[in-house]
Each structure stands twice: as structure tokens, then as C-alpha cells.
Length: 441
Image (cartoon, rainbow, N blue to C red; front, side, top):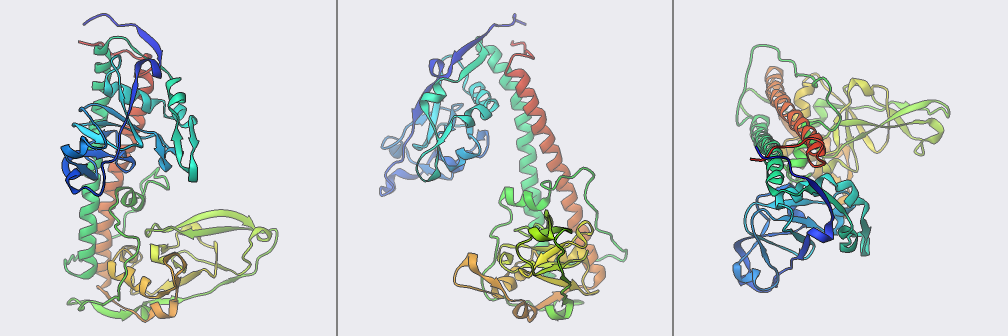
């Protein structure tokens, strides 16, 4: 082992050179669809940059942008994203980039170390962001150059620190890939089970597993599906066509398995009421604020009960619907919601997954009218006319149990990933300030 190197302070501008990229002419086909990554704001989603959505040719790189080697930090300096975060990523191969991105080159600091160092200073960088035209965030070069960087003088110690943090990143990356794969598999299996293309039966009564202890509102499969882009479109256009009813299943209209209910609430000025909302992407029914009756602007309100199925008339085309949980029994909603009681022919767990079926989403879209997507209104009477194929209750419960078990496994993996991210954040704070030292070989 060598002795520990000293740590030094320098301003960003003293030790880092920022290089701007560019965009080859779009009108020249010879510049595009090549083998070279060309990074822009939409690609800086992870620390290790493993590929861009747009790629250019070597000819394109020589006509409008430039190339940087593997291990170069890239930082976004202009874009709407800067209003909430400062994306920094490390190239994993030779790459190019556009004019909203800067490559960071330094003789004193190893590229990967500089990337980690800037991620650890993100809050400070965010404070340097101002707004250009149309609310676009901008990170001024003059302000960045004044940022004081504290780092080990010896590059071997920088590399040793990078190797430790890279192990955490590798574990996080592997978990991320595993979660995405399981979400994708579940989505495919769910569509098959909900249409009877794949059958699952059981003679035993399955109870859908409940939430994991300590789950947070954001720790849900739905939010993960949105994060990973597994949900696809939030709505499904087209005229819904019910498929042939599988053997052993029965066909019903929605009117036969749902009953519209209204429980008018006469608001009292000083009584506090719990308001609820339906999240998009079939994210379920969640609490909003609690207000006194005199504070509720829309006076036409209705009580909801645990087990009710709510449909947001203005947001159902984006999947805003779900079952009212026991914790929200007695909450109130306006007449912007359709409130339905499922019949005994529908298992609540199965109904939760049924809303994810492409056919179900098409019926909601087809029952909505309006001149623009965001102004469409759901017509309950029209929707209740649509048909739906339902398996026997025992099979419904088996389907719900199968899918909820998969969800539970995914949530456990997501929790593990979140804990690793928290550990890495704490480790970065100690390693990148010199509080904990790493011996270099």
C-alpha cells in the first residue's frame, strides 16, 4: 500500500475544460443512423451511458459535432430537465453529443471521479441554474467555473474511489435490468391471463397478498411501470371488439356486473372531509387534501365506500380508475367521478388487474367523447353497454394471486434497489470528501 495522498482544492474552471457539442444537418442522410452514439438531454437518464436514441456516422461527427473517448463525463447545461435535476453521465464508449450538452475534460481529475464528484454536488449545481426563454433551464459556464472542487491529488486514489462506487452502480444497474425484465414479463402474462389465452386454475381459495410492511405510496408496481416505460400508452384507441368467450368463461355486459351508486353528501361548513383522487395509469384511488365543507368549491359531493370502483370521467382515458381502499371509506368525490359497486361475480383483486387489459382501456376510450384528448368526457351509460368475458371466481382469484405474487417480488427488488441507492449516496458523501479514505494500490 502507498501512503495517502493529500487532497487539494481548485475551482472548476482551473482544472476542467468544458467542450460543446453540436447537431449535424438533419437534411443530410449520410450523417445519421450510423454506429456512433449521439447524446442529448433525453439520453442522460443514468450515470453510465450505454447508448443513445439517435446515432450518427463518422461523417456526421466531422460535420457539426465532435467525439469524446470512453470515460468522459457529459453534463446537461440547457433544457427543461435542469429545473429539477442536473444530469451527469459517463460515456462507456466513444461518443458524440449535441449543443445542450458539455463534455468535461481534465488533466487533474479522472473522468469517472469527476462525474461522481459533480453528482454529489447536484444541489449546489441546481442553485446555479437560471431560466432562459420559455422557462428553459440554463447552467451558466461562468457560475460553474467558480465551483470549488475538493479531490485527492493522486489519480490512483481517485481511481480507487471510483472502483468502490462502481461496485454499487453495478449492483443497482443489475437490479434495474432485472426489475425491467420482470415488469415486462408480467405485462405479457397479464394480457394472456385476462383474455383466457393462458389458463390458470386452482381448487384452493387464494387471497391476494397485501402490501409489504413499510411500503411508501411511491413504492408501487404502477409507479415502477411508469418509470420503466412498461405501461406503454396511457390509453388505447379503437373500437373495442370482445373476443370469443373462452371455454368455462361467461360473457356479461358491464351493466350486469356493476351497479352505479350515488350517496349525496350535504356538506357542513365546519366538518372536515377527506377528498380522494384517481391516479393515472391505473394507479388506484389515493387521498387528496382534507378540507372543511366551506373550503370545498364544488358543493355537489358524494360519499364513497370501501370496495367501490371509481372512474374519473375526465381522466379515465389515461387510466384514472380504481377500487376505494378501506382507509378511504367515507371520503367524498364530486360528480366528476362515476361510482360503481362491483357485483359478487367480480373478485376485487381480479378487477384491479382487469383495468390493465387492452380491451378494458379501449372500452373506456370508446365511451368518451370530445374534440380533443384532454377534453374528452366519459359517458357511463355508453360504457355499461360493452361486453366483457369473465372467468369463474376461482380462476379470477388464481389469476389475481399469480399476478400479485409477481408484484410482491418486484416490489421487494425495488426496495432493495432503493436501499442500495441510499447506501451509495451516503458512501459518496464520505468518500468524496475524504472523511473515509481508500488506499490505492
